[in-house]
Image 1 (tube, one colour):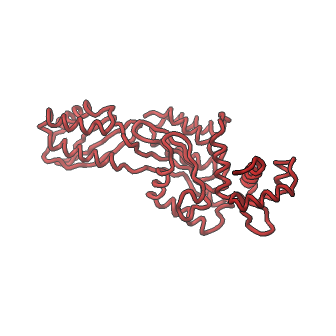
Image 2 (spheres, rainbow, N blue to C red):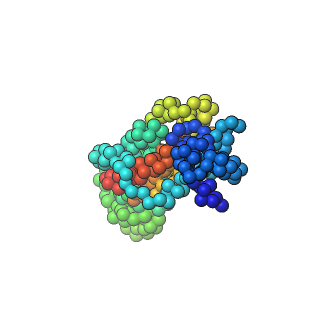
Image 3 (cartoon, rainbow, N blue to C red):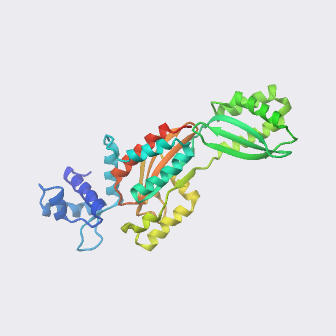
Length: 337
């Protein structure tokens, strides 16, 4: 358990290290943050905090730098505080709202603009909720035996797949099939829709039974294993950050961005149902990301979870990034479905 003085010192070291990128000495903490504490007192406390795992000393004669544990203490204090809109990111949010694009377009644009504003990598993602809500189902003729099945979920997420039907169906028949299925499916969670469609199939749609059975099976596959779709902004600005001048660290960072499935899994595992989550360094449990952090803000949107985020160095301005993402997440509420 940290004393009040120890807590003040840990937070002071985090603030100063984020600001300067240089290891922090006891005189700096005393002069800039804790003028009522002597450098000698602070130096003794810093030695104790190093033993407790909150601070590290890169060189014998150097000051201290914060560890992941210290960053976590700082980030949790930021998340617990009641934050008022400070104007951070509001012009960005207004720009995105003015475009009035669908959810995918909004997230794609947001990932790019977030990166430009922070000089890190902006992220946008759409993840399926456990019980997606179907807005509409449509069948469109491709050729004699192939039909395009299009499913639109609440929130604007679209799934499509070509299926082969047992016999030829005309465009009029497909339109009638779409109309009848939408009477049952529209506005209902997939779990309910599946049972209702199976009952409706046996009772009223015997003519289309085989096509319907195939469609239900395909819908189940599409909605039951929907992947996380991730958009990332430009990464070139990361090359200029002092935190990424180490070649091995840079390679690990770019390796993650190149492996879409791994990045999608990381985003899906660490995004909350609604709100901000922060993954710092080793907490990601992925080799090579020990000096990186991921900040995510997510919001349920009908049948999907919309996510915006920032991937950057562990030494990032968390308070600014969190405020920025909260503003953009709020702007998602005004995006047309």
